[in-house]
Amino acid sequence: SARVSSGPWLSLSCKYVFNAETTFASYGVRHGDRQGLLDAMPEKHKAFLRDLPWVVEHPNYIFIHSGLSSNPEKFQIELSEMKRKSVEKGWNEPLSSREYHVPIPVEVCAKTVVSGHVHQEEVVFGERHIFVDTTGGWQGELSAVLLPCNQVITSSVASSGTSSE
Image 1: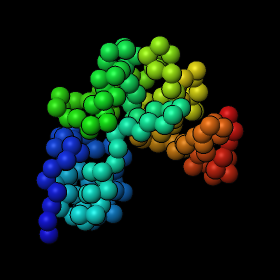
Image 2: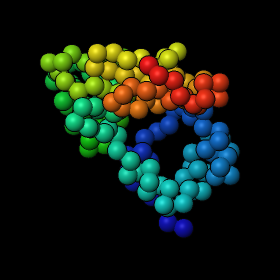
Image 3: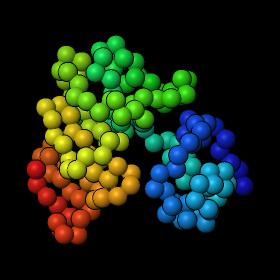
């Protein structure tokens, strides 16, 4: 079968494979066997992952994995790189850095930045930021936020799946 051998997500080296046992198992591959996973994945699944955006902009929000720099020049460069899915530098701080888990000054960006990547005990609502990672990639309840009403939805059975903030 044909294999996808290009695209940013395939060209990055994976140093860690966090909490992905079920993903590998669903393709019948030993956990951590990246090449085995790529070989086992149907083309349609690879295309889906390859075509996912790295950042989503809405008139009121920016959705990104880890966050963006609060430095005005870096903010615009990083936002542009994420839109282009640039891997030229090999390491993308907006996808990986824990340093970017900070509020963005209004003079840098008037939109609310919604990000995860850094574990929080509960969803954090700031002036122009929302931090939603309540598992840290390890354990805990998954959380999502219905916008613009800021209603938190969790995977918790005890909370019946929803809680209001």
